[in-house]
Length: 69
Image (cartoon, rainbow, N blue to C red; front, side, top):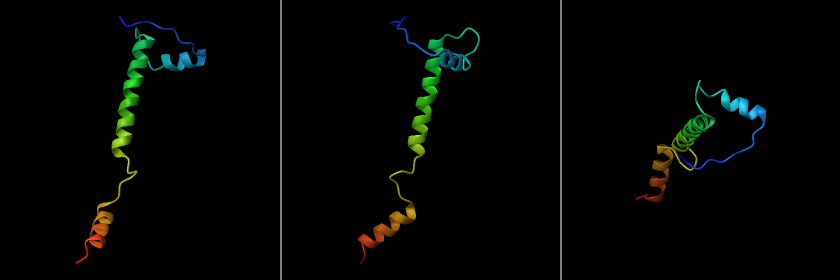
C-alpha cells in the first residue's frame, strides 16, 4: 500500500467528497476517481480549444497574401 498521509478538511468539504462515493468506497478511491475525471476534462478542453488557432479560410487568405504571384 502507498504511504498514508492525513489532510484536514472542513466537514462541508468531506460531505461533498463523500457524495461522489458509492457504498464501501474509501475517500482515497473517490478522490482518485475525481482526479482522473478532472485530468480527462482538462485534456478535452485543451484539445478542443481554439485559442491560438485560425480558421482554414484565414490560413488560405494569409497564404495567398504571402505567396502572391
